[in-house]
Image (cartoon, rainbow, N blue to C red; front, side):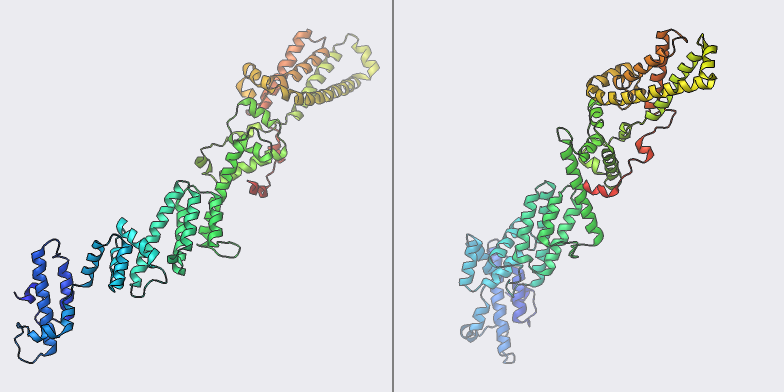
Amino acid sequence: MNPWTLLGLDADADTRSIKRRYAQLLKQHRPDEDADAFQRLREAYEQALARAAAQDRSPEDGTDQWQVPASVVQDEPAVVAATEEPPHARIEQLLQASASLDAALQQAREQSLETDLQRYLLARCATLDEESLNILRWGMQHLQWLSPWQADYLPRSHSDALAARLLALELETLQHRLQAGEERAVVEAATALLASDWLQSFDRRQQLQDGMVWMLEITEHWSGGLFERLCRLFGWNEDTGELPCSVERWNWLCWRCERHAVGQRLLQQLELDWPLRTEERAAWLLLKSMSECDARQLVDRFDSEDWQACQGLDELLTERYPELMELLGLQIDDDWRRWQPRQWTVPATVYAWLMLFTAMFTTSLQDAQMSVYLERSGGYLGLGLKDLLISVGVVAWMVMLARGWSRLARYLTRLDVPLSRLLLPAAWRDRGAGMLVLRHGLPAALFAMIVAAFAPNLVSGWAAFGIALALEVLFLGLVGSRRSPWPRWSMWRTGAFKVDYSKKAEW
């Protein structure tokens, strides 16, 4: 058997080349798979080593290179040592014979093979499958792999590559936990990673922070509390300039944090039994689905600050956080402004005065003793002045009475709203925000009786009452309707509810 042919080497190959080639062929001819091929390979290997040693010792002595001198085989311990089994084969056998990695490490130390064992196991971690990942974690725990204190004979480039891949796996696991809402577990895992030996170098800690920022950016749902805990853990501070990313990315994370805080506060406010504070009432009006009665009772408690809060919340949700409603599964009432106070006191007062003054002045003109009366009262000017003063006084008294009744009628909302739904056109009542039968209809009926009392000579009393009531109800319905031909004297349009944008921070 020619050993050089079997090994695929030239006859002048040195010892190092023979050992390298033997290690390559040993992977193809394992003793447990093909014993005969392994035996032939082993014999060729031993012969080649002996030939190479003989050539190094006496290259010019004329000895046949195919004959191994007995003295070389018997007297040279270097040749005997060279013919021993290569280290990696012995490591494989050691691992197969050991019940655990701890036992294999102990035996390797006894046989002075710890260096070869660590190199062999670290090389097996290249794939990072389940088995190699377990080996890697074992090495990190027992042999300080990937840390600044790992053995010097381990390849540093290979360790850095494994650390980068392991960190990517850890971040992926953290992301899955964050998506599942396990924020506490994420913080605990991040704390453990930050304290681990293999992440003590500056570069790897920076990679960890970059990965945490990336995780927050691609995950949709996380709380402001998580962000604050991560800031404390990693020392992120905008005031001191300790940021883990660019200013633009940091501002976006802060915006996400604020959006989440706003959403959680809104959900808490909507779960209340009844809103008591200004921002709570604003959230209910804009976001909560309520009946007409509940909405009417809620709005009756509003003041200027409540309407200002409604406007501020509307701008906050539509301009700063336009996608928050979709994330929360809520919908803002785009028509919430219909509930704003419809300041119809001025037009209603003028209209009522015109009706009463017209009825009184017309009645005075048709008086049977008009000629005598004109002489006593100073003519038409005196007659009109008297009716003017009386009508103004009566209307002023009616205005005060109507305001007092409006406050008392709030306690009848549960009856007033369904009654108005039954008796009034939908455009007039405007889903509870417009005209109401008891609140507005009763004062109108009382004023119609007064008009009829001051116009006894025009038509019959009931007819005058009916005409006056019809005119008043028509006026109130048109003014209360959003399709009113008159301008709406609302506080919103007159600027009384100007928004203080600095109060957005309350949300």
